[in-house]
Length: 297
Image 1 (cartoon, rainbow, N blue to C red):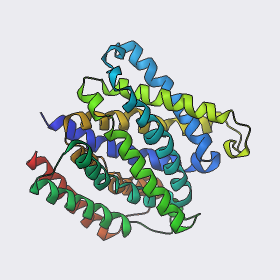
Image 2: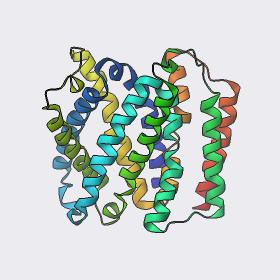
Image 3: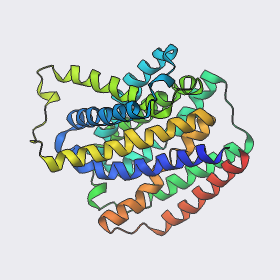
Image 4: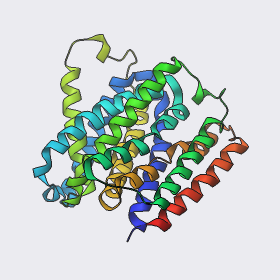
């Protein structure tokens, strides 16, 4: 039944759209490295506890350990460091626009790695989704809002966003064989986060100011750091891994890349900035594209 994996991919998009808006302020205060380190440690602990309670550890297909290692290093550590730095410098709208490129990048990698090809209807739906997303984001919000404030150069923001999209897309794609071998999505997320938390904690031992935050951690700041991490790492990543296990990687990536569109109403609710008319037109095009993909499946 394709309804569940399709819904999971869209749910992942909604989770990331909410999480990235919530993450912007604590990320700017703590810096990309410290923000990522705290999130990984907290979310890994939460998911490991959940796996222990639910008895999910035996589902892990350990023969695919190289895929876990590659997903941890490239998908989580490098991908999320690039994404958080892009978020800090460019804001959530620009970051999500660039992360939307994850879909075509994953589709290309899936073709090369697994020989997956998209049907004509799939390609039509994918084109409509990406067109709608770009319409909604590029002209869809107030560039003067606090969330859209640019604090870095456009070139640096674009480069970081492209790196984040490619790294994160690879990190999910490389896990597809392990998921198809029966690994539970929650267990897979727990392993990925635990490995990344361990690796980034080792790096943090290096006595360099690059890995230190100038902002003192408070209970409130800690909560606002962990919450978007749990939404993104815990809920959204698990949902998308489930979608990758049951859908073509390109389709899962496309429906998992709707967060650039969904972030607009989240910003509207948070700051009161109503999206422009083109945003609603883009939303309509995106919905039509998603419906074509569902019908093609």
